Length: 328
Image (cartoon, rainbow, N blue to C red; front, side, top):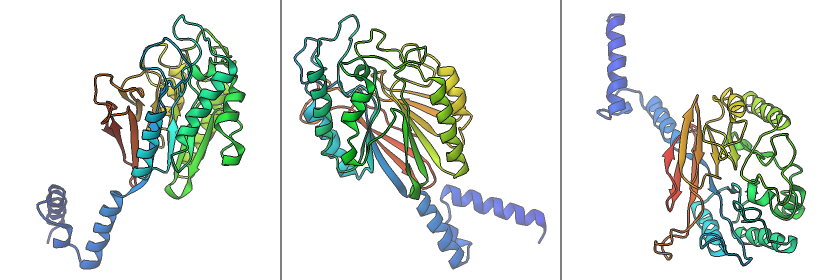
């Protein structure tokens, strides 16, 4: 039998198996056939699930800012319970958990005690989720009544074994070879922290020291043959200012230089669904947590994402409510 015949046969087997016309076991010895089927089954195995929610704008303080901003405890609890039911390993609140600070030209009227109470009630509601909860700084938190250190001391209690010394951080799932990176985009363009009651509340920026830290994290990811998933409140992809960080091009150059290990970055801030695929990285903006006031409240509490990572590192994003769904 000629080499040419062998090549054609292999091509035929590959094509017919791919189309489902025949099975692998029709041609392979039993032991090899079982290994191939096991490999195919394992490639479809979900190795990790997590939930993402953003822009809840929760407040128990009286205001006149509109019906979509308010006491959202039941909605937060619904998300937590849904993630328990889905078997999520952790959840991420991707910024603007509370509605404080400036809303356009409206200055904050919330005192420190009220602001702290809103942060605490958000976390108490999220405690219904049985796994770890991670919090990303949003512009509304940072333009509230207390500074970043004060916010972090509320969100990351030492007794939860989640105390995090910086507002940008990483956490790993070694068995699944996954690293999750949380960025802090709440900086002024000169690299200083946003301060309570700041007026430029919407803009974001990733300063040089954080970009250097990000490079170091991604070097480790590549060295250890991990994959990395990134979270940032403001958008890191190409979208019109002020919804993206002001130095987005610089940030993209860093992330996209690691596109072999960074499949996706998740964002909030835009209050709508948006997907941008650029140089091997997918930038996802999820719809804000808000009930459609014309919808049936008994059937839909709001918008969130369930993210599933498969053994072959494919990612499936399933949106609840009006949030987007996609495969990465």
